[in-house]
Image 1 (cartoon, rainbow, N blue to C red):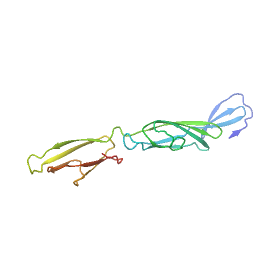
Image 2: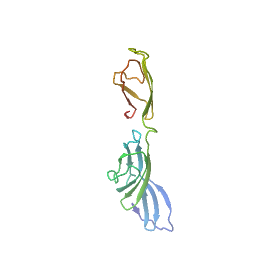
Image 3: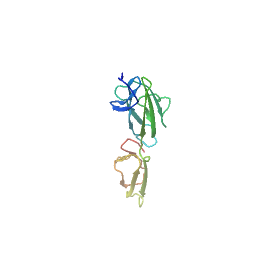
Image 4: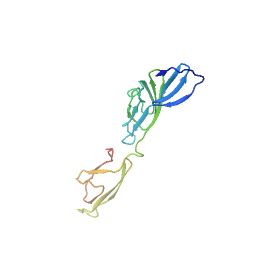
Length: 178
């Protein structure tokens, strides 16, 4: 809003709710502060499940959103809350009614490494035996991990195995699967 000033001999600034109020020769003008950005991390390393939630300052009328960043494309450019983002740094310029702009930056994170596993296999010592074992060592992703062996167990390591083929599915906290 603009309110006439009795006399203005210079330009000054003062804090105001929702922005900065500046004395102009034709009165006081409030310039809105920038938007508030809240990023959501990518669930699985290398994925595109990140997003950013943007809140505009109270009392502003946003007109356009111009985003820049590694996951911005024709689908999410111009959206208030872009989704389908990969990890990286994103910036936005919001143009408000009246032509003023606000900018913001957010970092969409991801797990430090992809879900992976190594294993140590102890083979059966003699024909017909069942003293084999598999010791899994999961890494990356987001702990804790869950395990689902095709022969039934849900433990990380399995023992008392006979000669066979054993398969396991490993999931992390974010449901990333290996």
